[in-house]
Length: 174
Image 1: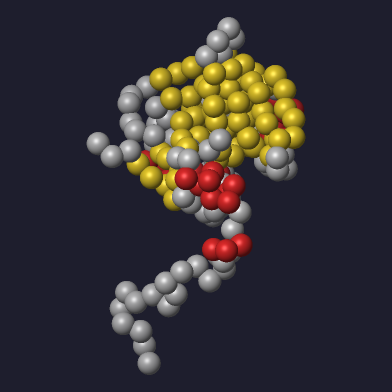
Image 2: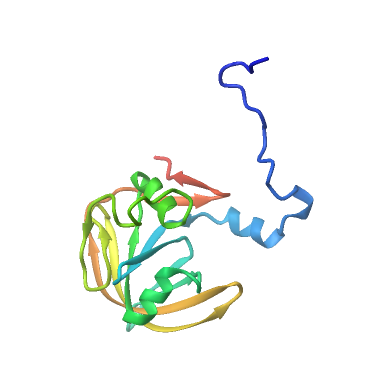
């Protein structure tokens, strides 16, 4: 017997952690919408990051939580600098690729258009990016808290940000 066209075999993810066993802290984090960014470093290497904070001051600073075992962190710590680009809704596949959720035949930077910077490659259609000098890092929870000084900022266009909320990408409603 064949299922009806469009019928789903499972109405839920069969591999999902049962509701009663899910971490309340992880569930809280999922309810805090976050802008999706792409962190890149000379090498090149990159990582999708949704835990980024910009702090204005003298000097202007950027903080974020990254995976200490990522290729991005190895490249950024070796170079002492990196770029952070704000992603927009047209970057969903790019975000998944750099998060390791989408195949990257030929490497992470093999597709799309890139602008070379001294801080790392930046998507050519990025509407905002910052060049950062690495200041410090330390273990923070299961991540690495990275602190950097913002040395360059480029703003082009005004597309809405790509957001991550409750495990899915979202867009701002007009």
